[in-house]
Picture 1: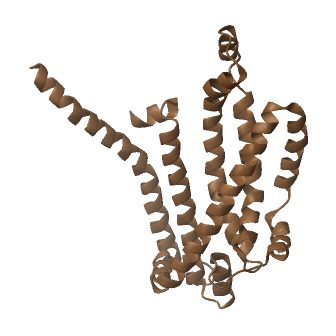
Picture 2: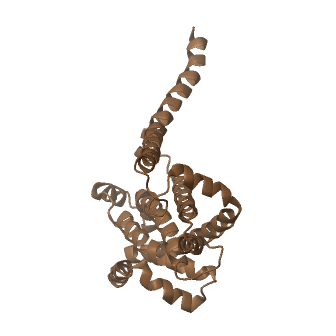
Picture 3: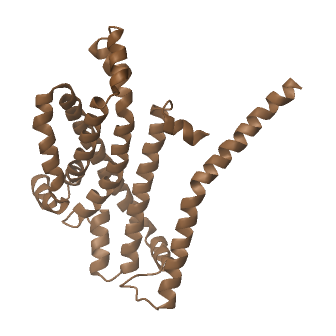
Length: 275
């Protein structure tokens, strides 16, 4: 009898995990299907012109017709967005560690990050193109750096400093040194803040890459490709490029979510998702 109960446990656990995952996936899928169906019906019912709003079916046909060109643009966009996201995260994380450790550094860096965040991306794009060259991927990466820097540094500082006072008092009572407090308390407390910032930065990185392309770049770059299609009045193809940008952003977000689950399986939010 005991063996039968133990044999049933993995099957029951598997069904529960499948049900939990289905509950997480089903709502967004339903929303997407309803949105696309409404969009398609709206454009057909009111005979909306393609230059105003093409139907999803028309956009999909344009996507398939330009699959080869969009594949090249996708690789370039992923390279530029990922490069800028990684570089911006490294710079902001380092600055956040320094700002959390020494108050004088924080008072110097935080206002700079706030000012940088207040400047629109459109202002930096021509300047970066002039500094690094419009066809140099580094010019697009630096735009992404300016977008990613603020959310990462702010969340790193908050995660390292907003530690539970009772927990901090407890580890001090055990005579723990600064490194032990950092490794055992401050760093784990920072991780949820850090990954939330990365998820925000993931979407911002794609925005920065595409917008920077409007001010010049390689012909196959995603932003340049979308702009050229609009100029040539090929609006379904332009929307196909926008679809690619959306998919890249979603892919980045999902990848960071997977890394988050791997890096902090002990966190309450990870346990609640798996039950």
